Image (cartoon, rainbow, N blue to C red; front, side, top):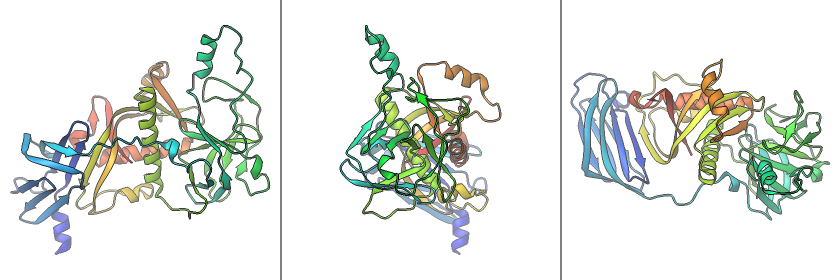
Amino acid sequence: MAEAAAAAATRVFLEVRRQLQSALLILGEPKEAGLPMDISVTPSSLQVKTSEGCTEIWLPAEVRLIPSSCRGLQYLPGDGLHLRLQAQAGVNTKLISVFNQNSQAQDCCTFYCQSCGEVIIRDRKLLRVLPLPSDNWGTLVGEWCCHPDPFANKPLHPQENDCFIGDSFFLVNLRSDLRQPRPELAPVVTHRLSSENHFKLKPKANTKVICKRCKVMLGETMSSETIKFYMTEIVIQPSERNFSIIPRSQFVQSIFAQCLVELSSARSTFRFSIQGHDGKVYILLWLLNSDSLVIESLGSSKNIKKFSLLEDISKADSSSALNAVKVLYQPCIKSRNEELASSWGSDISVHSLTLPSATCLEMLLILSRNNATLPPSLRYMNSFQVAFLKM
């Protein structure tokens, strides 16, 4: 009986825009065309009844719908019933920042490999946790100074108890960890300061930092004492805590979404070119909004193909309510969208984010999977694909 009810459950998708105080509700099309549906919308819940089952979703405490505001009712074949409502949703005024994902300065921290939990740096006391300047700071100094650039030969290297934070990476000093087990370091290559990511490595230099246990790329060596760790590969926690396992796909999209929110707020940029450490562009991404609360009930997912990487975000017969950012994206693998990638590459309003190449492919898979779970009418906007990245 329970299996029959699950099979008959109606797919429900609700996007609440906190700033606009509005909501879009989509009720999936029943398997049997013309099947009568009884829809009940209350301030705190949604209920859809058919002759074969009932689907009910309770809203988070901070969200309230206004049933009398229902408008724009329309039915789209193959998609379902659409309607819009006004919503009262608490606005999250606290900006989520990956700059603060590590513990506060003065605390002892331990750096872990996110994929397997291997300890990378143990009991590091961080006295200074500072954001790096923007990528073009060297150019700006050159334009402002009437004398030779005083910083030309002074790379921004962290000292022993420093952690410098870039757009998608941490810079840390390993001087005090020479006697401890360290990640596998590739041969160090000399470098000089540049306007792109603050460092420029020699062509074809092997500077990867590899986790000894799972062999995942964690970052790159910048000097004999400085390592760049990518935010998507490292978890930093106070040393008194135990390492907490977070599903890989959940962690990657959450950190990635937070990076987009942080950069769009700090630099007023909304278009991003996602490239691998190999210099190849993998994804072109356009941030549409960061105030969405997505609530969905997938109903039965017996016919949904599962990927091992994504099983944690495609659970059967589940409902979820998560903060999310809405993005448009174009994949650039296998020579796709080369002309658009070239155009974006020469546009100064497009911001480049660098991640390990394997993580770029993971991110593309997550975007594609999230796109496939949307109602069909929401999956495309002009020539771009649409996805929600959940935080």
